[in-house]
Amino acid sequence: MVGSEGLRVFPVTGIGEIKPGDGLAAIIANALAGQELWPVADDVLVVTSKIVSKAEGRFASLAEVRPGAEALALAATTGKDPRLVELILGESSRVVRTAPNVLITRHRLGLIMANAGIDQSNIGPGSEDRALLLPTDPDKAAAALSEELVGALGFAPAIIISDSFGRPWRQGVVNVAIGSCGFPSLVDRRGAPDRDGRLMQVTQIALADMVAAAAGLVTGEGDEGVPVAIVRGLPATAPIRPASALLRPADQDLFG
Amino acid sequence: MVGSEGLRVFPVTGIGEIKPGDGLAAIIANALAGQELWPVADDVLVVTSKIVSKAEGRFASLAEVRPGAEALALAATTGKDPRLVELILGESSRVVRTAPNVLITRHRLGLIMANAGIDQSNIGPGSEDRALLLPTDPDKAAAALSEELVGALGFAPAIIISDSFGRPWRQGVVNVAIGSCGFPSLVDRRGAPDRDGRLMQVTQIALADMVAAAAGLVTGEGDEGVPVAIVRGLPATAPIRPASALLRPADQDLFG
Image (cartoon, each protein chain N blue to C red):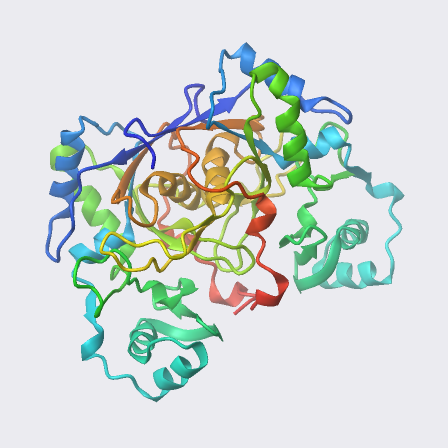
């Protein structure tokens, strides 16, 4: 339970444009020191997937993409650039829905999302031809970043890697967790009693998604240039589970 | 943009069990005063739908429900109590999906959700027979609550009424906004340039849903007994839009 002083969400500022090969841990540690923000135990460091992808060099050049037959057909249906569609298909295990300007697929990571998370905004100057893919393995990237931060922070912080998602029945995007380390991403309350002694009706809480959304209020999506936030005040009271635990198993998908 | 001191999310404690006819504004104002928490301009008061429903007296008694033929059939499919299914159908315009232990409908408010938001946890002692329906009109309830708080606070605060929702492809629930007043629930960024001068790819931000999720970290879902939170530090920079703006129009639903 959160204490009476509540939660805080701090923007981590002063992180410049990230380039392939950049060491995110050193850059983030530097930014934290620059703003005299010292992470403490139970803090969660929320990092937008965009800078993780950039550091991993997950750029693709549209000019080098040769769209295949499926990409050309889907480009006609959706009105999207066939080269972008080819990149989306390359990142996906199957197509879930298409409509004008909409291409929803199952990403190879298991995420069902628009455009396989491929991004063309805020990916650096001269980006007309470029696209940015999701990190290769966000849970692994979170674990690596946490470990690399031990030197600067004195402990391995909980990390969430966030990305913005649309929803089938609601307008606008919200940030969710696509990777995590050291955090109870999904909290299981099955069998816990409510205040009246009944068994709880809601059984699982997507805690990492709620933390990602809270952080999204300070990192934003666009021109803010704040790719990292610290969420403070959330006591760790549940078993650690990776963000991949948030994926509904395919055999329970009623909307595929 | 959020300032360097970041966001704060305060739990509002000391709100007891809410009964039908209770005046929420006075109870919330009292709780705020009791903890010496003084709302300021740009604060958002996030109130869980459960206490709004309780104050509205939206209780139903299962013993008084006579399930009809459709409810009996859906109860057989889902394994749910036929009387509960009858209540769900009474709140819904159509059934979206069924599966064992799953009944997803379009609520009369336009929300696509499990069980029409009908709640059987934490609805008070002796609740074996009772169920709690969603507030009658959450945007209107938010507006009324805001107006009723003017006397105590000296201004009409932004209000979000939140509820917890499952998602088709992700495990666990997150809090979203089902009602709001005085808040830019959906922020439109179409046409805004990104940092590199390109047009933004993500065009709409579900700001009220992200605030509801942030508040959900302190209000929780179950035995916490904290039904209200204050989110502080989010500057109002977009036109005010009600939570109903977050509903995707039915003609754009690819998953109905």
